[in-house]
Length: 235
Image (cartoon, rainbow, N blue to C red; front, side):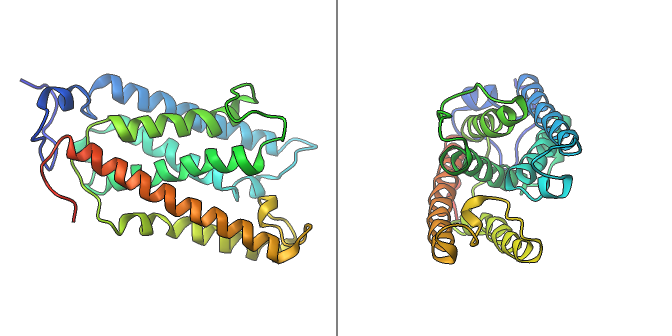
């Protein structure tokens, strides 16, 4: 008999497999806590670095970064997921984990394609450790967590569109802030650089298309994992 709580909705298929990967398993909770703590300590290191003379950004600018915002929430969510059993968390908690999976995947992709130094291979783990935690470890861990850990809550097809609200609001905020103080969080959003607004809008449109595609893939991947545990169909 399983020594972990029954999920809601309950597991109906592949009982042994899903029980072994139950979110209340101690090894899964310890992994979540460890990675969440690393992500938060890395953020504390970045915050301290931002206060030092010669830093590229100040603290306010640091916390205006998509990477920092998404990793902050991820770290807190992983720690809470480790501290509380799944039954003590709301049903929508899985949707939050899905959103964070989506955001962290995009963080890793955007960093590798648009932000990283030109001579830095996308597969490299040889970088400043907070960057390593936020751009490599966190995305990899949350993807594996999303695809492997047992879940029984299906997502509607509207879920990816809901996940897109935050990135869209972030873009608007970034342009408003840039227009006010002249600082743009990422170069590809900066209309004052070569190419002006046309270049910024074209790149942003490409990024939004990538966001939509990745959101759909994360959504489908989550529902596929849920289908391994329950016969309930997505609505």
